[in-house]
Image (tube, rainbow, N blue to C red; front, top):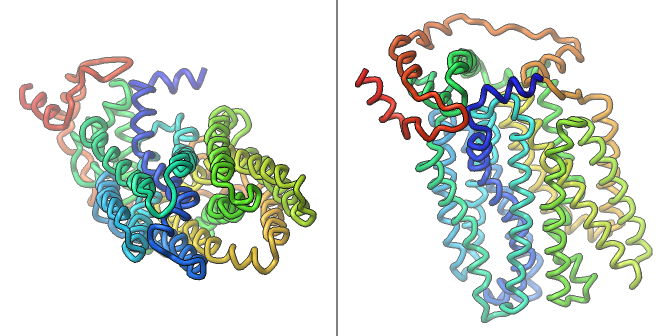
Length: 517
């Protein structure tokens, strides 16, 4: 009954889904760049005439430069977000991402530089996308919509590995297929900006209110909610704008106060485990693993890798049904327990590897990626913005890319020193410890708003929720501006219960309606 009431507030559920999917489309690039080198590397190095002796160091730099760029990108995103809107930040990210088409130049130094700037683009996107979705998404859909970033990453992984099919026929020093593969990120950046500009050209309402664009804020709210709920939602966004103004006036280091650390540590630990659960080691180094399993047969290696990507892509959709049934806490517990057990099995079997066990290891890795795609992959991304403010989301995202950079640089040495047995045993231990952590420290947030869930964390650890101080807020935020004009604008918009085809196409049209009145 409550769900039906919430659904009735939304003007068009389909339009809301599509709007948030377009914001999250940048996550395709985040996943794609994890996997597109896996099958490209032999052909790329053949084109670049890189010798076998140089291969390890060149590959390490090529892989590792990307998350370092992401670390820089998250920091840049946080800085420019102080001056720009969420939409404008994504535009900056996509402009930088478009230049990734320069990666088609056959020069190692150029490709390394492009990978770094592509990392900056992805870093900005990874910070802004969850915050932007949180701003525009109705609260009743947030638990599902917040996982769109994780879904996009898994889909991008699958696309990157699927593109490897071309190398079966077009590989070696004369192939140009790698150039086609390297073009994909720029295409995604162009597509997102075209859709944002021509179809879903919406700023975050609370940011519009902070800038005094009250009519435009109500226009955006009108596109999402039915007219009878616009005033209610406008008040909510006004309060959110006030909170953000107060946060801006406070020192950044307030995020490390005990009360905020309660939810911040949940985000940081979840991001750490997401990277070090074993799946990313498989994503980055599956080509080497499958070369051993297939005796370097390019067709068989490609099939193994594609199966990995497609299995994760298909498995992720089960999370949509699980999140409302069992909740994020239990999804993370189930995922960490199963992934830990699969890592342990790979570790033990690798100690006794033989011809008969190679295919068993492949199946175990397949199950590992499927479980990750359905649990830790999307859910770890979703809980960070759900229980943290923008500063907490920034810190968690920044550390997430740092954890990934460390893994990429360390795993080849880890594998060389303690072998696959030791590496996957370490991953298993991390997953089992996270299972215990989830059981005792995480809260089941099913049916709760973001604010209610944060309050539950504070109460669990003995902190009462401190009400926001409103000193100087009203002076800084003039929310009582042309109320009569704004209300008239809302009243005169056509009342369409399920879609917005009769609504003004942009803010200029909305202003014209007001002027005509």
